[in-house]
Amino acid sequence: MKEIIAEMMNGRWPAAEGEHDTCWRFCRYIYSLKGIELPATVYTLKVLAEPKLSCVVLFKVNAQWHSGIVWPDGLHFIHACQRGDDSDESEEYIIRTDRLTLEPWKQFIDGYYDV
Image 1 (spheres, rainbow, N blue to C red):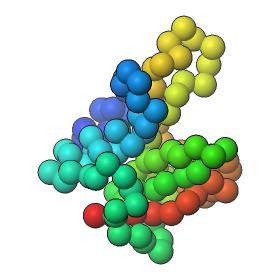
Image 2 (cartoon, one colour; image 1 turned 60 degrees about the vertical axis):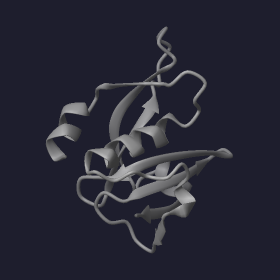
Image 3 (cartoon, one colour; image 1 turned 180 degrees about the vertical axis):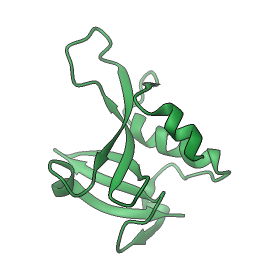
Image 4 (tube, helix red, strand yellow; image 1 turned 90 degrees about the vertical axis):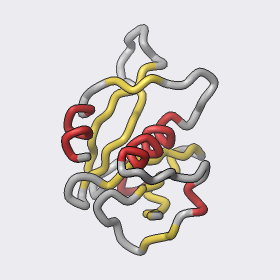
């Protein structure tokens, strides 16, 4: 799985038509590579007190939810997020990592979840 994620870094992730939870779909895809089917909602997963490698991290940002997977060291997470530029491809998402302990993400962490 490590090699597959490395290949996806800075790549593109298509937004599904009419789907607002593209980041959760990305998490479900990554888990499917491990042979695990994530449920439709994160709240049926086990709540963790601390992050652990490859667990789901959930954020609440301005009354909207965002999710990613803690990777590769417990301090970062990988996620599908909208491009932050003025390109014509506003429906396009990119795969990137960000640090959990830095702003703005740190203040928006809702919790960590695992199967």
